[in-house]
Length: 324
Image 1 (cartoon, one colour):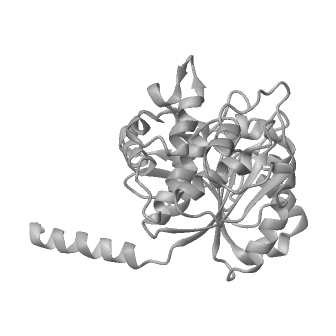
Image 2 (cartoon, rainbow, N blue to C red):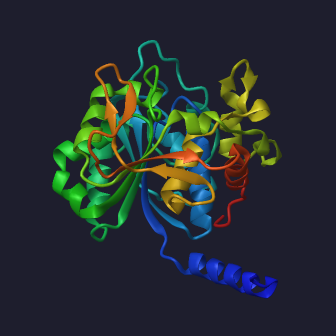
Protein backbone atom coordinates (compact mmCIF):
# COMPACT_ATOMS: atom_id res chain seq x y z
CA UNK A 1 0.00 0.00 0.00
CA UNK A 2 1.04 3.61 -0.59
CA UNK A 3 1.51 5.52 2.65
CA UNK A 4 -0.40 8.70 3.43
CA UNK A 5 2.89 10.59 3.35
CA UNK A 6 3.57 9.48 -0.23
CA UNK A 7 0.02 10.31 -1.25
CA UNK A 8 0.50 13.78 0.20
CA UNK A 9 3.72 14.19 -1.75
CA UNK A 10 2.03 13.08 -4.97
CA UNK A 11 -0.81 15.53 -4.39
CA UNK A 12 1.65 18.36 -3.76
CA UNK A 13 3.57 17.54 -6.92
CA UNK A 14 0.32 17.55 -8.91
CA UNK A 15 -0.55 21.00 -7.60
CA UNK A 16 2.91 22.32 -8.43
CA UNK A 17 2.65 20.90 -11.94
CA UNK A 18 -0.78 22.50 -12.44
CA UNK A 19 0.41 25.84 -11.11
CA UNK A 20 3.52 25.85 -13.30
CA UNK A 21 1.74 24.78 -16.51
CA UNK A 22 1.36 27.35 -19.24
CA UNK A 23 -2.15 28.81 -19.30
CA UNK A 24 -4.42 27.70 -22.12
CA UNK A 25 -4.73 30.38 -24.81
CA UNK A 26 -8.48 30.53 -25.46
CA UNK A 27 -11.03 32.37 -27.60
CA UNK A 28 -14.59 32.20 -26.28
CA UNK A 29 -17.38 32.19 -28.91
CA UNK A 30 -20.73 32.74 -27.19
CA UNK A 31 -24.40 33.49 -27.91
CA UNK A 32 -24.57 36.01 -25.07
CA UNK A 33 -28.23 36.93 -25.50
CA UNK A 34 -30.71 34.26 -24.50
CA UNK A 35 -29.67 31.97 -21.66
CA UNK A 36 -27.80 33.24 -18.62
CA UNK A 37 -25.49 30.23 -18.65
CA UNK A 38 -23.42 32.20 -21.17
CA UNK A 39 -22.84 34.79 -18.46
CA UNK A 40 -22.13 31.99 -16.00
CA UNK A 41 -19.66 30.41 -18.42
CA UNK A 42 -17.80 33.71 -18.78
CA UNK A 43 -17.65 33.93 -14.98
CA UNK A 44 -16.16 30.42 -14.81
CA UNK A 45 -13.68 31.36 -17.52
CA UNK A 46 -12.57 34.45 -15.59
CA UNK A 47 -12.27 32.43 -12.38
CA UNK A 48 -10.01 29.94 -14.19
CA UNK A 49 -7.99 32.90 -15.49
CA UNK A 50 -7.61 34.12 -11.90
CA UNK A 51 -6.17 30.69 -11.09
CA UNK A 52 -3.64 31.10 -13.88
CA UNK A 53 -5.10 28.27 -15.95
CA UNK A 54 -6.23 30.24 -18.99
CA UNK A 55 -5.35 33.35 -20.96
CA UNK A 56 -8.57 34.80 -22.41
CA UNK A 57 -7.46 36.06 -25.81
CA UNK A 58 -10.85 37.34 -26.99
CA UNK A 59 -14.61 36.93 -26.70
CA UNK A 60 -16.81 36.95 -29.80
CA UNK A 61 -20.58 36.74 -29.93
CA UNK A 62 -22.45 34.62 -32.45
CA UNK A 63 -26.12 35.46 -32.04
CA UNK A 64 -28.00 38.61 -32.98
CA UNK A 65 -29.10 40.25 -29.72
CA UNK A 66 -32.32 42.25 -30.24
CA UNK A 67 -31.10 44.58 -27.51
CA UNK A 68 -27.85 45.26 -29.38
CA UNK A 69 -26.08 44.71 -26.06
CA UNK A 70 -24.35 41.32 -26.13
CA UNK A 71 -20.91 42.96 -26.30
CA UNK A 72 -21.85 45.27 -23.43
CA UNK A 73 -22.83 42.29 -21.29
CA UNK A 74 -19.54 40.54 -22.11
CA UNK A 75 -17.53 43.65 -21.29
CA UNK A 76 -19.43 44.27 -18.04
CA UNK A 77 -18.55 40.76 -16.84
CA UNK A 78 -14.90 40.97 -17.92
CA UNK A 79 -14.59 44.42 -16.33
CA UNK A 80 -16.01 43.10 -13.06
CA UNK A 81 -13.25 40.48 -13.04
CA UNK A 82 -10.58 43.10 -13.74
CA UNK A 83 -10.15 42.36 -17.47
CA UNK A 84 -11.72 45.35 -19.24
CA UNK A 85 -9.38 45.22 -22.24
CA UNK A 86 -10.13 41.74 -23.62
CA UNK A 87 -10.97 42.15 -27.33
CA UNK A 88 -14.64 41.66 -28.17
CA UNK A 89 -16.19 41.07 -31.58
CA UNK A 90 -19.78 40.62 -32.75
CA UNK A 91 -21.35 38.79 -35.67
CA UNK A 92 -23.30 41.51 -37.49
CA UNK A 93 -25.57 39.07 -39.31
CA UNK A 94 -25.59 36.62 -36.43
CA UNK A 95 -27.96 33.70 -36.09
CA UNK A 96 -31.54 34.61 -35.30
CA UNK A 97 -34.48 32.51 -34.18
CA UNK A 98 -37.83 33.51 -35.66
CA UNK A 99 -39.98 35.07 -32.98
CA UNK A 100 -37.12 35.27 -30.50
CA UNK A 101 -37.66 37.68 -27.63
CA UNK A 102 -35.21 40.38 -26.50
CA UNK A 103 -32.59 39.19 -24.06
CA UNK A 104 -33.75 39.28 -20.47
CA UNK A 105 -30.42 40.53 -19.17
CA UNK A 106 -27.88 41.89 -21.69
CA UNK A 107 -29.25 45.45 -21.81
CA UNK A 108 -29.37 45.62 -18.01
CA UNK A 109 -25.75 44.52 -17.74
CA UNK A 110 -24.64 47.05 -20.34
CA UNK A 111 -26.60 49.90 -18.75
CA UNK A 112 -26.09 49.20 -15.05
CA UNK A 113 -22.52 47.90 -14.74
CA UNK A 114 -19.16 49.48 -15.66
CA UNK A 115 -18.09 48.81 -19.25
CA UNK A 116 -17.02 50.78 -22.29
CA UNK A 117 -18.48 48.63 -25.06
CA UNK A 118 -20.39 50.14 -27.96
CA UNK A 119 -23.67 48.72 -29.29
CA UNK A 120 -23.15 45.42 -31.07
CA UNK A 121 -23.49 46.87 -34.56
CA UNK A 122 -20.64 49.32 -33.81
CA UNK A 123 -18.23 46.76 -32.36
CA UNK A 124 -15.40 45.09 -34.33
CA UNK A 125 -16.53 42.23 -36.52
CA UNK A 126 -16.08 38.79 -34.99
CA UNK A 127 -14.19 37.44 -38.01
CA UNK A 128 -11.72 40.33 -37.90
CA UNK A 129 -11.13 39.74 -34.18
CA UNK A 130 -10.45 36.08 -34.92
CA UNK A 131 -7.97 37.05 -37.64
CA UNK A 132 -6.05 39.55 -35.52
CA UNK A 133 -5.89 37.38 -32.43
CA UNK A 134 -4.93 34.16 -34.21
CA UNK A 135 -2.24 35.86 -36.30
CA UNK A 136 -0.57 37.11 -33.11
CA UNK A 137 -0.33 33.64 -31.50
CA UNK A 138 2.23 30.84 -31.87
CA UNK A 139 1.40 27.95 -34.16
CA UNK A 140 -0.85 25.27 -32.67
CA UNK A 141 -1.41 27.24 -29.49
CA UNK A 142 -5.06 28.37 -29.48
CA UNK A 143 -8.13 26.59 -28.12
CA UNK A 144 -11.55 27.77 -29.25
CA UNK A 145 -14.61 27.20 -27.04
CA UNK A 146 -17.96 27.58 -28.83
CA UNK A 147 -21.23 27.71 -26.90
CA UNK A 148 -23.73 28.96 -29.44
CA UNK A 149 -24.32 29.14 -33.16
CA UNK A 150 -21.38 28.01 -35.29
CA UNK A 151 -21.76 30.98 -37.67
CA UNK A 152 -18.46 32.64 -36.79
CA UNK A 153 -16.61 29.36 -37.10
CA UNK A 154 -18.13 28.73 -40.52
CA UNK A 155 -16.91 32.17 -41.63
CA UNK A 156 -13.49 31.43 -40.19
CA UNK A 157 -13.05 28.05 -41.83
CA UNK A 158 -14.32 29.39 -45.17
CA UNK A 159 -12.23 32.58 -45.16
CA UNK A 160 -9.12 31.63 -43.17
CA UNK A 161 -8.67 27.86 -43.40
CA UNK A 162 -4.86 28.05 -43.48
CA UNK A 163 -4.87 30.31 -40.42
CA UNK A 164 -7.03 27.83 -38.52
CA UNK A 165 -4.74 24.97 -39.51
CA UNK A 166 -1.69 26.90 -38.35
CA UNK A 167 -2.88 28.41 -35.09
CA UNK A 168 -5.73 26.36 -33.61
CA UNK A 169 -5.00 23.36 -31.42
CA UNK A 170 -8.53 22.17 -30.58
CA UNK A 171 -12.15 23.21 -30.85
CA UNK A 172 -14.65 22.51 -28.05
CA UNK A 173 -18.34 22.72 -28.96
CA UNK A 174 -21.44 22.74 -26.80
CA UNK A 175 -24.00 21.52 -29.28
CA UNK A 176 -26.06 18.59 -30.46
CA UNK A 177 -26.60 15.47 -28.39
CA UNK A 178 -24.90 12.09 -28.26
CA UNK A 179 -25.07 9.37 -29.24
CA UNK A 180 -28.05 10.95 -31.09
CA UNK A 181 -30.77 13.56 -30.77
CA UNK A 182 -34.49 13.09 -31.31
CA UNK A 183 -34.95 16.77 -32.20
CA UNK A 184 -32.49 19.49 -33.25
CA UNK A 185 -30.57 20.96 -30.31
CA UNK A 186 -30.76 24.76 -29.91
CA UNK A 187 -27.20 25.70 -30.86
CA UNK A 188 -27.32 23.56 -33.98
CA UNK A 189 -30.79 24.87 -34.84
CA UNK A 190 -29.56 28.48 -34.67
CA UNK A 191 -27.58 27.97 -37.89
CA UNK A 192 -27.84 24.41 -39.24
CA UNK A 193 -25.88 25.14 -42.41
CA UNK A 194 -22.97 26.52 -40.40
CA UNK A 195 -23.06 23.50 -38.11
CA UNK A 196 -22.81 21.14 -41.09
CA UNK A 197 -19.89 23.11 -42.55
CA UNK A 198 -17.92 23.15 -39.31
CA UNK A 199 -18.61 19.48 -38.58
CA UNK A 200 -17.43 18.42 -42.02
CA UNK A 201 -14.66 20.90 -42.79
CA UNK A 202 -13.04 22.00 -39.52
CA UNK A 203 -9.38 20.88 -39.76
CA UNK A 204 -8.42 20.41 -36.10
CA UNK A 205 -9.65 17.98 -33.43
CA UNK A 206 -13.16 18.72 -32.14
CA UNK A 207 -14.48 17.77 -28.69
CA UNK A 208 -18.28 17.72 -28.53
CA UNK A 209 -20.33 18.20 -25.38
CA UNK A 210 -23.97 17.40 -26.07
CA UNK A 211 -27.13 18.82 -24.55
CA UNK A 212 -27.48 15.87 -22.20
CA UNK A 213 -24.44 16.93 -20.15
CA UNK A 214 -25.76 20.30 -19.00
CA UNK A 215 -29.31 18.97 -18.69
CA UNK A 216 -28.15 16.66 -15.89
CA UNK A 217 -27.00 19.57 -13.69
CA UNK A 218 -27.92 23.13 -12.76
CA UNK A 219 -26.25 26.11 -11.13
CA UNK A 220 -27.48 29.50 -10.05
CA UNK A 221 -28.55 29.49 -6.38
CA UNK A 222 -24.87 29.82 -5.39
CA UNK A 223 -25.05 33.40 -6.72
CA UNK A 224 -27.51 34.40 -4.01
CA UNK A 225 -24.48 35.00 -1.79
CA UNK A 226 -22.63 37.01 -4.46
CA UNK A 227 -22.46 40.81 -4.12
CA UNK A 228 -25.01 42.89 -6.00
CA UNK A 229 -22.11 44.46 -7.91
CA UNK A 230 -21.63 41.12 -9.66
CA UNK A 231 -23.24 41.35 -13.13
CA UNK A 232 -23.47 37.58 -13.41
CA UNK A 233 -25.70 37.53 -10.35
CA UNK A 234 -27.95 40.07 -12.09
CA UNK A 235 -28.15 37.93 -15.23
CA UNK A 236 -29.41 34.96 -13.19
CA UNK A 237 -31.88 37.22 -11.36
CA UNK A 238 -33.35 38.47 -14.62
CA UNK A 239 -33.42 35.25 -16.66
CA UNK A 240 -36.65 33.34 -15.93
CA UNK A 241 -36.66 29.57 -16.13
CA UNK A 242 -39.86 27.52 -15.86
CA UNK A 243 -41.65 30.38 -14.14
CA UNK A 244 -38.94 31.10 -11.58
CA UNK A 245 -35.78 33.16 -11.38
CA UNK A 246 -32.69 31.22 -12.40
CA UNK A 247 -30.91 32.46 -9.28
CA UNK A 248 -33.54 30.81 -7.07
CA UNK A 249 -33.95 27.40 -8.66
CA UNK A 250 -30.99 27.15 -11.01
CA UNK A 251 -30.48 26.79 -14.74
CA UNK A 252 -28.95 23.90 -16.70
CA UNK A 253 -25.24 24.65 -16.93
CA UNK A 254 -24.43 23.54 -20.47
CA UNK A 255 -21.97 26.35 -21.22
CA UNK A 256 -20.25 26.37 -17.84
CA UNK A 257 -19.27 22.74 -18.33
CA UNK A 258 -17.89 23.39 -21.82
CA UNK A 259 -15.62 26.17 -20.57
CA UNK A 260 -14.22 23.92 -17.86
CA UNK A 261 -13.70 21.16 -20.41
CA UNK A 262 -11.91 23.47 -22.84
CA UNK A 263 -9.52 24.77 -20.17
CA UNK A 264 -8.78 21.63 -18.16
CA UNK A 265 -9.32 19.04 -20.86
CA UNK A 266 -10.99 15.67 -20.40
CA UNK A 267 -10.29 15.02 -16.72
CA UNK A 268 -10.55 11.31 -16.01
CA UNK A 269 -12.41 11.78 -12.74
CA UNK A 270 -15.15 13.87 -14.37
CA UNK A 271 -15.56 12.67 -17.96
CA UNK A 272 -15.88 9.61 -20.15
CA UNK A 273 -14.74 10.16 -23.72
CA UNK A 274 -15.72 8.41 -26.94
CA UNK A 275 -13.46 8.64 -29.98
CA UNK A 276 -14.07 5.81 -32.44
CA UNK A 277 -16.25 7.62 -34.93
CA UNK A 278 -17.40 11.08 -35.96
CA UNK A 279 -20.21 13.54 -35.32
CA UNK A 280 -22.77 13.84 -38.13
CA UNK A 281 -25.49 16.46 -38.60
CA UNK A 282 -28.38 15.54 -40.88
CA UNK A 283 -30.49 17.83 -43.06
CA UNK A 284 -32.97 18.43 -40.22
CA UNK A 285 -30.28 19.56 -37.77
CA UNK A 286 -30.18 16.39 -35.70
CA UNK A 287 -26.81 15.10 -34.54
CA UNK A 288 -25.68 11.53 -34.19
CA UNK A 289 -22.45 9.63 -33.63
CA UNK A 290 -21.46 7.52 -36.60
CA UNK A 291 -18.87 4.76 -36.55
CA UNK A 292 -18.70 4.40 -40.32
CA UNK A 293 -15.27 6.00 -40.22
CA UNK A 294 -13.13 7.82 -37.71
CA UNK A 295 -12.33 11.53 -37.65
CA UNK A 296 -10.52 13.57 -35.03
CA UNK A 297 -13.81 13.95 -33.17
CA UNK A 298 -14.55 13.10 -29.53
CA UNK A 299 -17.71 13.37 -27.49
CA UNK A 300 -17.93 13.32 -23.71
CA UNK A 301 -20.36 12.14 -21.06
CA UNK A 302 -20.30 12.81 -17.33
CA UNK A 303 -18.41 10.22 -15.30
CA UNK A 304 -19.86 9.46 -11.88
CA UNK A 305 -22.67 11.46 -10.30
CA UNK A 306 -23.40 14.82 -12.00
CA UNK A 307 -23.32 16.60 -8.65
CA UNK A 308 -19.54 16.21 -8.57
CA UNK A 309 -19.12 18.26 -11.73
CA UNK A 310 -21.90 20.61 -10.64
CA UNK A 311 -20.00 21.37 -7.40
CA UNK A 312 -16.80 22.21 -9.30
CA UNK A 313 -18.71 24.56 -11.58
CA UNK A 314 -20.62 26.17 -8.72
CA UNK A 315 -17.44 26.95 -6.81
CA UNK A 316 -15.90 28.61 -9.86
CA UNK A 317 -19.13 30.49 -10.63
CA UNK A 318 -19.03 32.35 -7.31
CA UNK A 319 -15.27 32.67 -6.85
CA UNK A 320 -14.59 36.37 -6.11
CA UNK A 321 -12.40 38.29 -8.55
CA UNK A 322 -8.72 38.48 -7.64
CA UNK A 323 -7.55 41.12 -10.15
CA UNK A 324 -9.78 43.97 -9.01
